[in-house]
Image 1 (cartoon, rainbow, N blue to C red):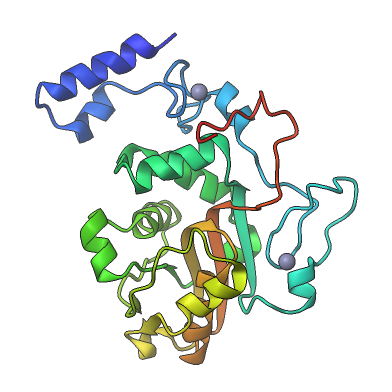
Image 2: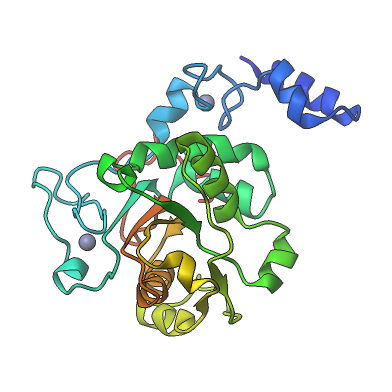
Length: 269
Ligand SMILES: [Zn+2]
Ligand SMILES: [Zn+2]
């Protein structure tokens, strides 16, 4: 039980000491449960919480990374969307399903401003970043927020994740090549077709000359219908980008349910 340790960290930070160096002096317990020590010095997660992560594993669609959870014994094969060539990116991968501790972590970062969730989520991104995607990536481009949303939230979670991933991999991050020029309503309740329509024309490439011939890793927190990633890919390719791979922490599948609900408890219900 390491909760007392986290309470001590919290208490000392309330005394007004800087949180950044405090983390170095007083390491936290597992980011998700706060009860156990992380599984290794490089990990933010304890063994128990690592087991709760709904990892995306084979069989998957080799193009968009969609898992085939209903037929676990089949091999990798194209999904229906990719048979219809719906996604213009070279490939996409997500580390885990948008559920349980992963969804909670993304929510805590995005809506709670809990920046200590960046390293654990970057650990997930690194696990999903295949060698093929990593090889020859010229730069990482985070999916941008509209300036109004950026002002409301105070930060772009995709940009923060990209910065940490780029630093770890030694790959430059370009925050300035892509911009969200049109305000769009939150997409949560929209269907796939509505989402595509909603984001159509929402992005512009601010520096086309910096994009031409580049192999880009497009980075976002969640892959839902892929409409945002598709629209970003479309405008980047229009400006001559050589190839786009997409990477997200999680993938939302509306029809997915955990095989053992009690083991994969979803704090959001
Ligand atoms: Zn834990
Ligand atoms: Zn697919």
